[in-house]
Image (cartoon, rainbow, N blue to C red; front, side):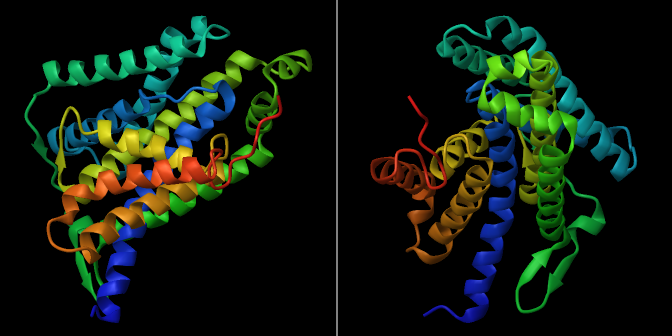
Length: 296
């Protein structure tokens, strides 16, 4: 039998991992809600964010807070460029064209990093204060608390942004109907650009979180987290941002529980178990846990 301390430790670990997935799924769901696009290039922003922070902090010796701000800014700028160059002229065309373009952007960024930086993984050394270990009823590092608190703050700010700001309200309008939003005077291009900027900035921040949590970054590190974020969006409910966040936390807990509670050796199947859950959810509730059926 497992003790209470061990169970709480695994729940805490699942919440930390789920926080990263939830942020990724949040950005992916934002873009999908407006464009109907599952943006697989989202995973490349994880890699960009991780390497940007690495070089700013460890090579250029910039202060931690400044490195974070510049990493988020670069992520937003890359999101702006990808929308302006890769997606804008394809809007209104077949959805498959946008999907293929997102895959192409991901492959381009991944291979550019591989060519310009290195095909070998980099060790990601945290600032000392983030590695401080705290022992109480459970054991955790400061970076774990940083991830959870940052996730909560971003979700609160995002909720206020969507409900209170003009851009956020316009995003909700476009999500309902692009044509109607244009007729009432909403600048559709500007709002879509903002959605990519916000989603990409969040993804770049999660790149730092991933590297800081697991201590290693590589040119292809964004692929599987990006796929898991897509699964979280589908499980939580296509078109539902709260559903995407719920899906992210659910997957994080499932992966940690697979490693922590199932027999030794089952950890290699943790991704397979997640995809099995995806199939089960789609069979029982095709629109996802919090998804809503679209009218025909």
